[in-house]
Amino acid sequence: MSPEGIAILILLGSFFLMVFLRFPIAYAVALASIFSLLYQGLPLSTIAQQMVKGISTFSLMAVPFFITMGVLMGSGGISEKLIALANSCVGWMRGGMAMVNIVASYFFGGISGSAAADTASLGSILIPMMVEQGYDDDFSTAVTITSSCEGLLVPPSHNMVIYATTAGGISVGSLFLAGYLPAAILAVSLMIGSYIISVKRNYPKGDKFSLGRLIRQFAISFWALAAVLIVVVGVVGGVFTATESAAVAVIYSLIVSVFIYKGLDWKGVWRVLETCVDTLSIVLILIATSSIFGFTLTRLGVPRLAASAIINITDNPILLALLLNFILLILGCIMDMAPIILIATPILLPIATSIGISPIQFGIMVILNCGIGLLTPPVGSVLFIGSAVGKVPMERVVKATLPFYICMVVTLLLITFVPPVSLWLPSLFR
Image (cartoon, rainbow, N blue to C red; front, side):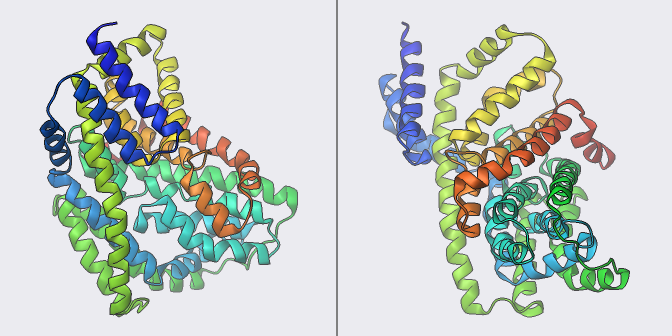
């Protein structure tokens, strides 16, 4: 075997071994890269340089701001108001609370940008509420965790910023716009699945629809929803960069949470900032260590070799697109979201573009695939959070989630094979 082949074997073999042994993913990525680079005779200073280079990107400054915005709004009494707004919209249907859960996730996702935050915040309110009204606890938990993936697609999403940076400076504004329609289709497909199950199990209806109540709840919730408008309109309209809009949104979120909704006092703000620092440290460590991994992969020509190997399997664009989704889904079962974006994008994006998939379209595919991975064992963090919040054994949650996996895969296939689903809005505002 050639020296390059041995270095690749050391890199990938040690990485997957450490993942199998349940090492923290940041350590697995860093150590595998160090072992491979040392075998190649590179100095350790190269590792430090690549780590610093990985996080020294202006666009990545938006990530801590978006995380702070999401935690501020999520802790500032926003959840109850968005639930009330969703209830006014769809609570009247059969299985109304399931519909409320799905629509509230669409609203809340536009604020938090995090499936985990959505599940923890909305789930702690809605799951007990649904169980009290006669819904099965495993069904309630399954609806909560699957609908939380809408938050990954609805801007502002810090994972979109990470993908845009990793993919080579793709427009963050275009990615933001590209997520709206896929998230709406995902919500509709989950609502259809929920309605069918609700009819079969005779789950209750909510109160009759009232336009007056909807208008009142929208007026109350407007201040929360306006945070999303600031970011998206600011970026798409060219008023702000993504980083600047995120900073403005943090200030706005602070004002809304403390002075308008009064869900936070100043002591609460400090606690929120502590939470943000904890979350941000994890994200930045992942980005820094993944930068070494990406550097090592590129140096050894792994993206080129992987592309050749995959294309040699078949040259059919449909089969290649399905294969890309399959690879991302498998990775989602064993890795968390940010590492998949950071590691898989440089390898798989050239293959996707070679069969006519736009980098923006592929970004939405990656994010939804990763979202499904968050719900799959053994590393499905959102699955664990939902199980803990709903106090339901994970095995029952997985079984109850099976019909919703079908809804999510149907949405994924639409995104993959119908490009306008993700590209129509960006092209409209280009």
